[in-house]
Image (tube, rainbow, N blue to C red):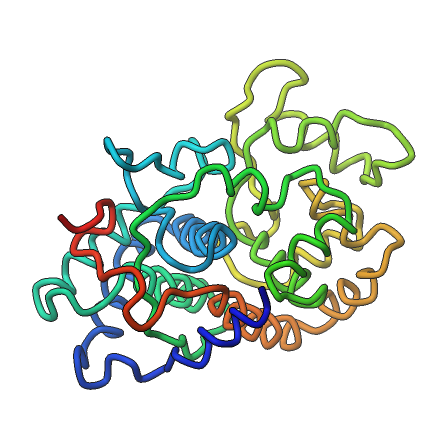
Length: 308
């Protein structure tokens, strides 16, 4: 798989639209920034949307396809249903692009640029996004269950999951730092905050606080901020929380639980600049996962549907 990633990567370029749509990046930027200014939580949603796209059959905008007679959408697959959001922001940016450069900029590239703009808008790093991806003509809902990390996965499973995509343990820890933003549903962390087992490393006060918004029974969809201190700002508090045993999800705390990634978490907790630099580099590498290039796929006119 890594060979395929590298072959496709060579066809991506940061100036891919320099001639064909010179205002593409500024158009996406303005559209995304306007949307996040209305709801800052959307920054986390867009980063997650790009992640969920790339980890399922590559960065091909398959996650954006709506249900149709010929498409079984990824949107309603368990890892995305009622949690993945921001689709309408990508649709809006794409619609603006279609007015100035019809049929030129792919939905996959819009999503990649939107993730970068989301990070930058809320104080996170920026990076030069490689472009030239094309859009899939299929969705892959079954792969959401096998390829996206499960919120109760152990450390080695996570390392293997990211490794299968050509990403290192350091990339994995850096990308997990996106959980400095956004919210999680109660059912994803209930077991963690109500368990007193020795395998469940958690600060007691933190668990008590979190139980107020997440009952032991019911309230599955109740939302809680991933980072209580600065929930809408991109910073390294996520890693400081892990060191204090205040990670919300099991897959968060497992990164600092006596295993091989403890040293990386500690490094990021002490150095915001190292975290930012590594996060940007990891996002670029994630954007290289199995893109469709050349004549593969298509440039969708509407992100939610395959061209007729």
